Length: 467
Image 1 (cartoon, helix red, strand yellow):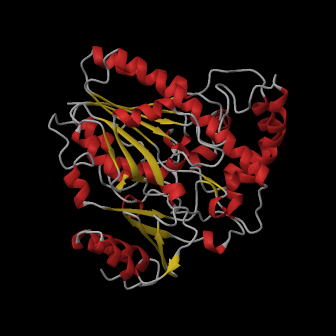
Image 2 (cartoon, helix red, strand yellow):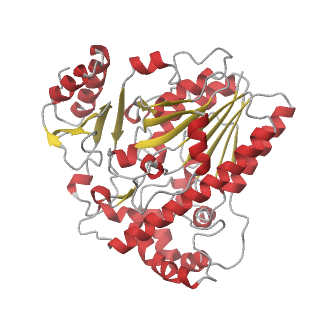
Image 3 (cartoon, one colour):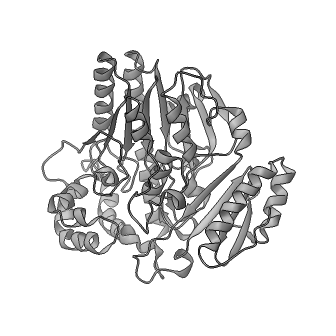
C-alpha cells in the first residue's frame, strides 16, 4: 500500500501561475519545479466554485448534485463512502489537518472517515491590528455569523467558535505542514499506512502578505496605506456583498487585493518548498502518493465577482493539480480532467498495482474527456442580483464549453475567448457538434448531455439537449 498525502491550497487559481497574469505573476520556484517533476495537469477543473462541494467531490468522486453538499444544504448526508472511510477500512490512519472551519466537525458529514482531526491555529499572541479590528467589529461579526445561513447551528451558538474563526485568518500553514511532516515520521516508524489531508489556508482571503500576519510589516511606512485601507475593503467583500445590486470596488482596491494574493502565493510556495525538502530528505516520499492541488480559484472583479462564488467561469474552476506517484514518470498533461477523479486516484493507493483506470492513465483520460461542474447559488444574500441567484451547470471538452441554466445555454470558445467575455447563446447541439469534430466519443457526449439535461430539468425547464 502507498501512503497518501493530499495538500489542497485553498483558493489558488491556475491562471495565477501563468505568465500573462495581471501585475505579472507571483514567483513560485517550487511549484514551477514540481510541475517539471510530477504529473502536472494544466486543464484540471474543480466541480464547484467553493470549498465544501469541491472537497465533497474529491472525497467521493461525485458531482455536487450527486453528493449533495453545497450552499443549499451545508452538509454531506449521502450514503456513498468517502475516501477517508475507504482508506480507514483498508487499515490507514486517516487525519485532516487544517484551521479551515469547514473541516472542524461543525458541518455534518464532510470529515466522515477521518479518525483524527487536528486544528492548527497560529501560536502568535498579543495585540495586533487584526485583533483590534475584530474587537471593534465583534457585534457586527457575530450578527453576520448568526444570520448568514453559512455556519451550522452548533458553530453559531458557540462563542469559542467566533473567536477561533477570527483567529483562523492569521497565517499558520507552516505550522500545519510541520504537523503533517511529524505524522509522516511517526507512522513511518510504526510501519502503518497513512492518509493525511491538509487544507492549506494562507492563500485564502484576506490573502496574508506576511509570514505571521494579515498585514505587511508596520515598521515600513510603505505598508501603512494598505493597512489603513484593508479594514474598509474587507467588510465590503464580507457577507457576499459583491452579489448585491450596486456593489462597487475601486480599481485601486482591486489591485491591492490582487497584489496581496500574489504575495500570499509566494509565501505559500516557500512553505511548500521547505516541507517538500524535509519530507524528501527523510525518504518519506519514496512510497507515497503525493498530491498538491487547489479546490477552486478566486475572482478579483472578473465578471463582477470577487472571492469564490456564483460562477462556473474558468477563473473559479480551473485549478493547479500536481501528482507524484512512485510508479509514474513526470509528464505535463494538457487533457481536460476533473478534480473529482482524484477520488479514484487516492483509492488506488490501497493497491500496489499501477494506477490503471485513474486520471494518471491516458486511456482513462481519453474515455473521460469532458469535465462537468455545477454551482448551487447561495440563498441568504438580500438584494442579490438576479443573474447571481441561479443554479448553473457546465461541461468543458478541449477548448469548447457550454453553460446551461433554466433560461438557456451559452457557448464559449476558450481558445479564442479564454476570459469568457464573448459567450454566445445557442443550441446545445452546437457544442455536441464541436466535440464530435474534435474526436470526442458519442458515449462521452451522451453522458455529459444526460447530466446537463437532468440538472436543468430539475429546475423546471427542459433544454432539449440532444447529443
